[in-house]
Image (cartoon, rainbow over all chains, first blue to last red; front, side, top):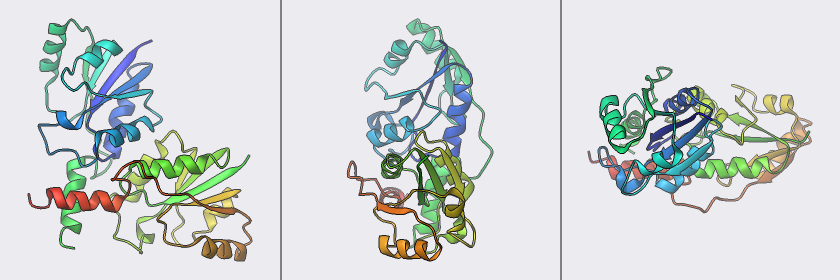
Length: 141
Length: 141
């Protein structure tokens, strides 16, 4: 059983997320998703949708075998528990493959790190762009 | 085979949508979803997410067996093709059960009409509330 871990905030679900998860799933037999906790999203605006609801939407996707919220204090703990062969990064996730590989090595986790490319199928494949579009089209009402 | 038809815009997917689809699915053996075309959304602001992307997200849900876009001019044509035993309405869909029953009778479609209740699990279970929250929290930036 080759387990793959994908991670993210998944604030407003869009086809870019689904592409990321589908590409991740292809790298193994079972896809485990770790959904970021509200309190741990610090490098961008706080999520619009709360963590319990973001988790529920991710669990409803065909491509997802298992999903859970991240650990409040130790991001590597769920990865140790899942023991994946591969950890994937989305195209716009803010840390580098090398940073993550180094951190995993320090924790004694042997998973491979793979960056999934950008989904180019449409113009709304990022939560930021969706939020921008809402502000642009609805902000004056 | 007892087919169920659910319909909607599904603009920004949230747990309220998933609840509506799961409850609809329980009324039969196979869930068919008809996703509203951009041009046919006239009773509320135009969707933020385009129809192809909204369809793709709905197709990615475990609970959905088949999904398609609505007919550009005749909303009953896909229903005739699917020939469902049940058609469900979401709690905030704008036409009444009786209006829909009458219109189906006129077209010779024998499906039962069932209104699915409101999902009360959280405060972001409507696209309008999500948009309002984005405008409130991000509009000043």
